[in-house]
Structures are given as C-alpha cells and as structure tokens.
Length: 77
Image 1 (spheres, rainbow, N blue to C red):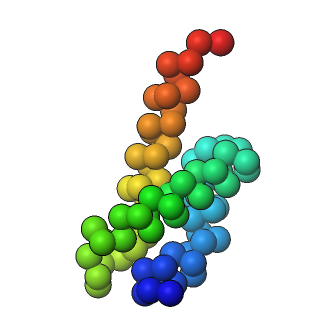
Image 2 (spheres, rainbow, N blue to C red; image 1 turned 120 degrees about the vertical axis):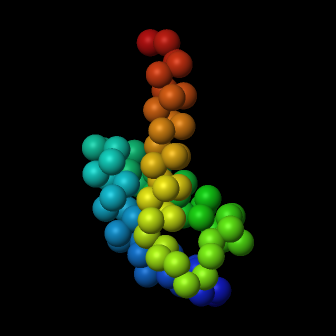
Image 3 (cartoon, rainbow, N blue to C red; image 1 turned 90 degrees about the horizontal axis):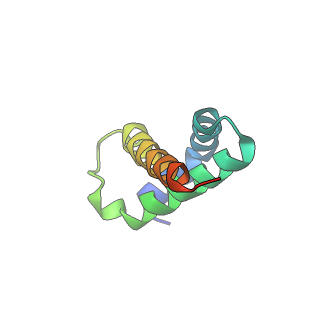
C-alpha cells in the first residue's frame, strides 16, 4: 500500500462523514465517498507529496457532487 493509499484509508471515516453531510442522505453519502476515493486513487499521481490531503479530497468530492447534481437536474421526472 502506497503512502497516499494509507492516508486515504486513514481518512475514510472523515471522507464518509463529509460526504453524508454534503448529500444529506446516508446512501448517497456512501456513494459520494466511494466515488471520491476511486477518483483520488486514480489520480494519485497528481497529488503533490507534502501537501495536506483533505483539501484535495474536498475538491474532488465537491466537483463530483456538482457533476452528479447537474446530471440529476437534466433528468425529467
């Protein structure tokens, strides 16, 4: 396990908690947390070592949530 993977694993409960608060739903929060972790791991090479991981994860999470909400808004009821 690389350093960033272990840091993300250590921050899992924080990621999940923030995601649940953003989405206002536990199930959607779980999905958002999962998507955030997947995107962070896929883009780990873009993270600069020595910087704080939380703001980077928050940016990924916020952008993922915004994209999802834009998609949901386009779906007619």
